[in-house]
Length: 61
Image (spheres, rainbow, N blue to C red):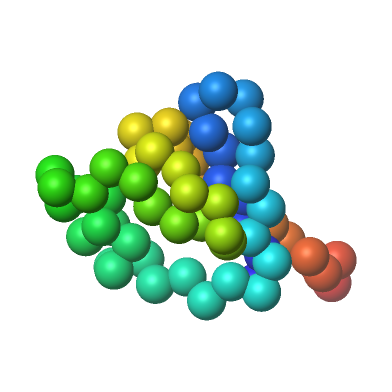
């Protein structure tokens, strides 16, 4: 699966082949003691994340 992580500074991080655990990542974002997260090797301040959206890679039939 491919995801685009939209940041509030206008940048987009593309995660290819990502196994994304929504529940675990939500818990990480809600943890007040954690400020930075690793997104595909990029260390990002979690307050910069606006959205994480799946990217459709195949043409719909």
